[in-house]
Length: 230
Image (tube, rainbow, N blue to C red):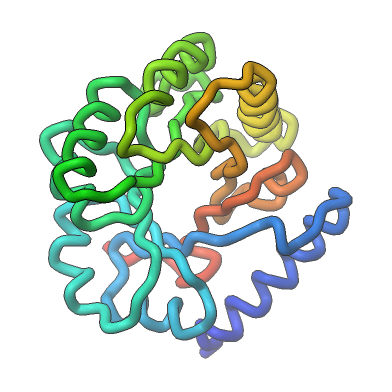
């Protein structure tokens, strides 16, 4: 059976090839290992292999899992977050990637202030237009960013999206391209208090297309761990 280390090394080679094809530096692409439904031992295997960040979908799962992980890492919330769980999210996570409304951002800012910390966040954008998909609409993105930027206990680091659910490369890449273009437009506005270096896009089935469109952070699970535990 292939060890996690072997899978990670093979994945790094794929990322490097994809980056080079796009004329990019592979070192500009980081990986968040998606560990939802994975055991604490699997999380530790990822961290021992040189990965620094893990991504989880649910606050409740991390509440029980994180204390069982002996190694330090950067914990990312990549799933939808309800406002009433903002306090727990601030206590558990280093970054929340799924901020898509002002009410949630304000709650996170308040609890980060109470915890005397500054929380890294990404704003999730619904670039596919799918009704079931979370994220602010591209049309409302600029106004939301302008409202979040002054919040003193949040560090807005960039944008996140989930690629269109399609097997067609052009359709998926269009959703990634839209996020990159949105980031570039925002950067040109010169809004104080935001950093837009991070473009979190690309999962196990489409990360090579995401790299081609400028992804700086990939969220990868099954390509590292195999089929998800149920």
